[in-house]
Image (cartoon, rainbow, N blue to C red):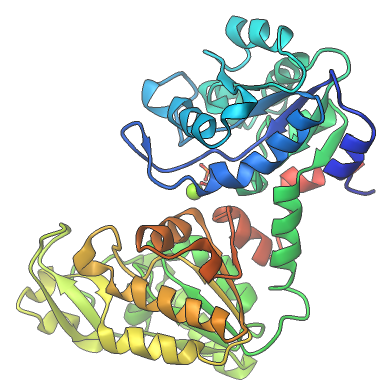
Length: 412
Ligand code: 3PG
Ligand code: MG
């Protein structure tokens, strides 16, 4: 069983063939404006390579989580408009539907070297169905768009952990290949699981601790240091017996976190938790706020109603110090509500330290849509880091050592 590469597909000749690429165009939007085009820019090389080789390129992708029916706010139109700006020479068009009359007609008349994006693949409920037969039927409709000599390329790393029709089932219907974006992600992420250069520091943030538990479990004994920020830190503080006011808390996860804290020391992994927290009167950009000790969150003037929205400056400096000298750093999840400038300092401190680690010769990886958007929003260049992963959930599941359906499906 092996994975076949894009180069093999191109070397075999694609002129005049319909090639369906699953791309990850799931970009953040403000109305109809793409606020971070990282995933679009990352997807264009494979689309361009196939178009330049004369393929008739079909692109399937999802945006957001529509409920299995068309919904204007989840249209791929803004993403396609940005693609056209970035690669006007490709003559990229968008079908009005996913596998319906518009997609069929435009796919059939596609010229060699041109590109048709199908409308949001999640506008069809069968894409994400738990029923194998439903997904297979939808995958067959997608495959039919490629005529009788089609091929499939999976280049959507951000979706390889999903057992969806356009990611998993389609690969059984067409000769299937691994896109360069996914190949590069795998190469990079392998360095985080195999012969990882030490010291290895992991920075975890983001709101939900339950999303991160499996990866934390897997990193205990592998990472030298795990720095914990973001909304999930409050479950850690609670596990240490501290009150967290009205901050995000997953009470049911406290025992699990306690177990991790207990196991870590013996396994040679040090957890570093913030010692100061920026506590706000409410969840708003202009909310009144104060910095208080992490073990006395309710000592702020907001009392038990206070809401932790960022790590404090002492913690930001301590996290930066813990990253100093690291040979490998993986970061997933913002340290605070970085979208509000008043609560962005912790995330900025971590991003700055990560950029410094890169300059010092460390191998640094930013994982996840939110963290990637955070560093770009804060004005960092992509080149400040070793690698910015396009995958959030996918990179975490990879680090958990889980099987990724989108990859197993490509083996033949
Ligand atoms: C992502 O944003 O992580 C990927 O595009 C996958 O999206 P999903 O979590 O909605 O499947
Ligand atoms: Mg996501």
